[in-house]
Length: 96
Length: 249
Image 1: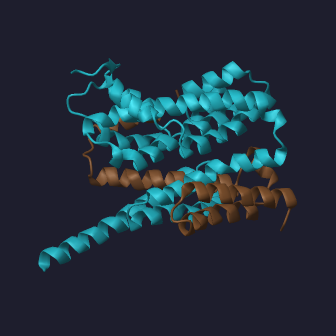
Image 2: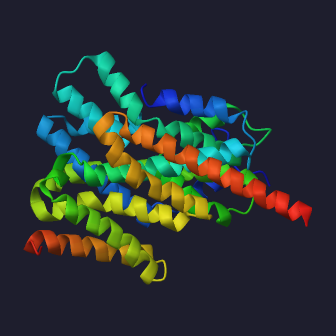
Image 3: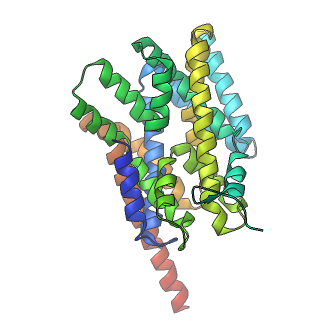
């Protein structure tokens, strides 16, 4: 029920919104910000298994994934594979 | 020839969405369910319970928080309130997507069905795939196909992770748990269309740590609202100025 409240309100409120309008644009920015904030929360203040890893490693891997994405001609597969491999190696060997 | 329908949606469009079942997005987000399954297993939650929870709740952070609070014996009212606060993104995502999918002649129930399948992964995937859909009338069915495919995939991952997680080395498990965060962040960059999108991605990285120390429970929400509003306002002002300059010339 707790998640459906927002979905329900989203459906109701979206009826008044015109495609390509200012409210839609505003919601797009909010969505991007909320996803970005969730990722940073996971990186800076994690719960579960990730607590066992140093924060510097997580920040480094996240930023390097973005860097790898651009230098690999916008290849998502290359970026994810390489950053995951680096993270695994760093954790397994405790390089830094 | 009239195409077959499934609950107000055309089967042909749903199949089109289902074709993207084995995408990088599903693979990467599926890994986050490894963490959930292991966590649930440690709490003594059964496999069928976690699968049912995935289908009904369909919001991973809410599931994680719900399980954490359940383990701490938090009262039901507080549990609902806390999980509700983590799911506010559903509101923004639904408002962003629905006007693009809706048809004037469509039944209202279709909106609620689409709202049910809303998640970060479907939102991100839809942003990427929308230009590939030929007709507007195909969009809602396509989105439903994406959602059904994703839910099916996650349920399978949950079952696999629940059964085999003990055989995976700890370091590998930690690495895999971090893949979804990396994917979401890189996907945001890949779906960014205008300069303002990049600002909306970057601002929360500064605001979230600051707000975490002031309001740790509301840090995500507050940083998202402040960043989103600020970016929208600046973007609006810039567009307005450009419009005035163009019309003066």
